Image 1 (tube, helix red, strand yellow):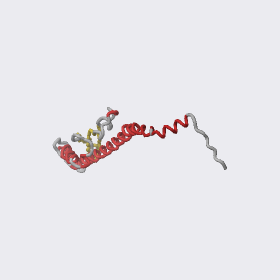
Image 2 (cartoon, one colour):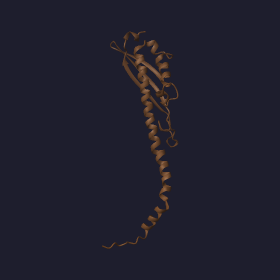
Image 3 (cartoon, one colour):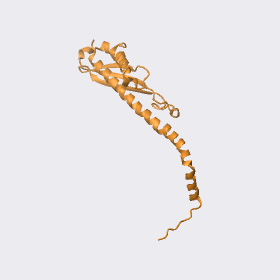
Length: 165
């Protein structure tokens, strides 16, 4: 059995020569730049925004549990535990410190009396700043601009008499 060699000429020969010169390696740098700027960094920002949002939901849950136990005058006070103490303690923890919020979250406490059952609603408004500010995504919340989230939840008051105090 004889093997025949076929002479390669024309465009195939130029392509083979190009690979040997290493020009594919010179295209790797810009491709890597675009991959990081337009894919990896935005996904990382969105993952961290999701973590921040979940930590703010945990804060809202802590505030709601406390507001359901306290009298209305204490829970609705701007210097009380629901609006000031719990967010300050949350901010000093690892979860609150890594949440991407710069300011203490704003909290609103609202009550609704429905046929003898008193519901308390706690609404927490937070501004989450992105972990990496990507200049190409200016104005996109969570990637190039701060993300404002409002988390609200309601619960039945443990002692309905606290509604009147």
